[in-house]
Every structure is written in structure tokens, then in C-alpha cells.
Length: 584
Image 1 (cartoon, rainbow, N blue to C red):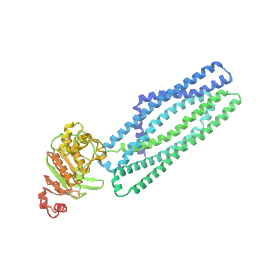
Image 2: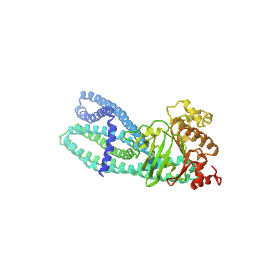
Image 3: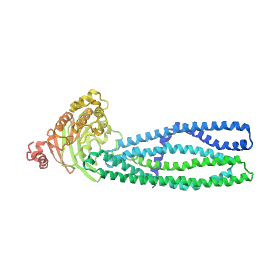
Image 4: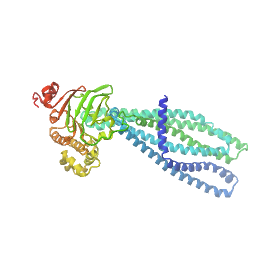
């Protein structure tokens, strides 16, 4: 429990730190709020001379001065209102911008294992929906709290100045109001957390169904997905209504308790006027100040609900911000140099959660050599290559690049040495040029065109209406499978990294596309230390060495001719693809 409270307080401190960084504009906003509070307090203060001097004593001089004073008061109130509104919203929006940036940076830096556990839609909801709820708290609640606090102070001074005994009657209800407001706030926070989780779940479902709309349509599952969506929106609706009912309760409570306070003031103040102890002007000035006072007090009760919602959003945001990466940077990291690399796996073991995925992996891949990895699905091929850029960390042993344990190398310099082409081409909703240049943002047009030419992509790119400036759509949706893969190869070529990882880069292509992609890959592999995961054994005849993985262990290694001659498991894999003809 203590640990939880410490985390909660530290989260509040982080938010306050962001607020404090805007102290200059906050100070200016507070000056504007003080002007507003002073003007608001002056209004009931002026009621006494209006009633006593103008209406009862018929003072002509006061008749000229007081209307002028009222105009000045309301002008100052308007100036203060405009200034604090603009300044506080600037502060709020800027804080949220920075918080959103920090959250995105944190998520971007987290390891692959984090993304495998979390739903993409849920992470999107954290950055958009949850941060927006905090925005309401920072922009509206903090502004309103400060403004109303100053107004309450000013009006309280007026009330006690007019009649301190009568003021006690007005304030007797405030301690009573405190307890239901706190209880309602706690309930709002609890229900809001459930609402945000439901919204995140809804966002995750939208992301999945929109991304997989082709499968939804192909299997005729539109009615099923519609029902799922309706069920989730119904759950969200019920939670939203719980929040609304909880929030709506605070106003009636404050109205009723405020009514009791006003009734006590009328009873006591009226008695004093009738008995001659007070003037009508004093009474009306007092009652106006009380009525104006209950307004900001009621607003504060509503703002408490907004703050509780914001704190619930902050909890969900800081859950991610406090997530620790299991990929640690060395205290004094080694900077790997760009050159041909020798990669050694020394008795490597790797466990994913409770499952041992790789065992006793010993490899020595010389600079510029090609190592092919084959085996049945689930054998550990992708897990092995994912260890090289430290997408995951090994549990035992070490991986060494040119005598440096990769855990001692800086992550940036390590990943600068590696280019990856995966089975599923990952492209962005950008131009062809932008996607190729992702491998080297500083590259010029000529370098980009050379990379496209070496990837056998130049011909189809030139056929586009806008050439390299053609937008390829989300995930490259306007390109064929072979075109996507060649853009990915061009991207890897432009990066010009000395270590290359090809994860079944041709397995999803038809024969014609595979031929072109294979030619492009041959250009890409030249002079690079290459790790090739192969689904089709026909594509790895060029490999300097082939290893066969089974249940996370290397069961045999050698050239294709050697493996066909001596290994039954490899021969079986070959036979499954080529029939009885097992000639190398």
C-alpha cells in the first residue's frame, strides 16, 4: 500500500513539475485572476452604497460615481478573464504536448517484448484518449481552481468585512459539504478508470478490424464484428452513464447545502435589519456576496470530478512511463565502427517468458559470409536473429561482434550496423522516396535512385505518375507484394549496414516476383555478413553455410551439398519441397 501511495505521489509531482516549468505564464495568468477576483468582489461591495446612498439617502454625487465605478469594475473583469483564459489554456496545451511527446518517446524506446504483450489500439488510446482527459484536468480544472480560489478569497473578505457573525452562518455548511464531495470524487475516479479501459479496448478492436478488413470481408464476418462493436459500445455507454450519475450528484448536494446556508443568512440578517442593528444596504451587499460565493464553491465541487478523472488518466499514462525496459544500455558503452563484422554466438540460451526457445547456440560467422537458417516452424530461427540487434536479451552466454559483447555496445551503434528485410514488408504512409530514405535520411536523390536501381525497383517507380514522390498508402497498400519487398530492399541498400538479416524475405511472393526480389537480394548481400531465414530451400544454394534448427537447438550445419549427403532431417525438408529429387 505504501509503495502504491509513493508511486501516486510521484506521479502528481511529475505533473506539477510540468506545471512549474510554465511559471512565467502562470504568474501572468494569476495576476489576471487576481484582477478578476477583485472585480468580482467589488460588485457586491458596491451594492451597499447603491442601496443606502442612492436609493435611501438619495445622494446625487454617488449616483454619478457608482455607475462609473461599475463600468470600470466590469471592464477590468473582462480584461482579466480574457488574459487568464488565453494564458492558462496555453499552459495546459503546452503541458499536454510535452506529456504526449514524453509518452511517445517512452513507448518508442521500449523493447519488442513490450509491444508483443500490449495491444496497439490500447497504446494508441493511452496517447490520445488518456492524455486528453489529463488535458481537461490541466487546462480546465487547474484554471478553474485557481480562478475560483481567488474569487472565494475576495468574496470571503467582503463577507467578513460586512458582518463577521453573519458570515459564520454562511460558512457553517461548508464542512458538511466536504465529505460528500470527496466521496463522489473517489467514485468518479474509480468509474473513469473503467471507462478508459473500455475505450482502450474499443480502440484496439477498431485497429484490428480496420487493419484486417480484407479477412473480415472474405469470411463474411461483418455481422459478427458489428455485434462485437455494439457490445463494446454498450459497455462503454453504461460506464459513461455511471460517471455522469456520479458527477451529476455533486451539484444537487451543493445546491441543497447552499440553500441551507442562504436560509440561515436571510433569517439572521433579516432579524438584524428589523431590529435596527444593520442597514438594508449592508444586508443586500452581504447576501449578494454570499450568492456570488456559492457559485465558485459549486464549481470547485464539479472541478473535483474533473481532477479525479484526470488523475485516473494520469495513472494509466504513468503506468507506461514507469515501465522499465529489460534492454539496458551499458554505463560506458562501446561505439561499434562501420566495417565488415565477425559475429560469434557463444553457448547462447534464450528464454521467452517460461519457454526456453534457444539452447546451446554456438556459431562463428566470418565477415562477408552468408549463414542460412532452416527448420520447421517454431524451431527458433527468428528468435535467433532477433538477438543480434538486441530486440531481446539472452539469458545465458554471449553474442560477440568483433570482440565486443553486444551488451557492452551502445544500442544505437549496434543497430546502425544492421539492416533487416522481413517476410512482411513494413512500409509507411509516405512517398516512395520517403520510404527508401528511411534507411538513411541524409541520402540525396541520386543515392536513393541508385538504391532503387540495385533493388530492381526503378522501372516500376518510374511508371508511377509522380515517380519517387508518389504516396504508397498505409502499409504500402498501393503496391504489389513484390514491389513492397523491393522498396524494403532499396531501404536496406541505402542504409548500407555491414550486417544483414533476411527473415523469409521471399516466402510470400509468387515465382515471378521472387525472381526479381532474389536478384535484388543478391545485390544487397554482397560483402555483408548475412543471416538468411529461408522457407524455400531453393533460395539458399548460395549460402556459405546452412544450419538446421530443431526445438531451439542446432542439430547440424554445413553446405547444402553436405547436408543433403549426411543429414536425414535436412533431406526430409528438401524432399517435402522438391519431391524425390534431392540433388543439390
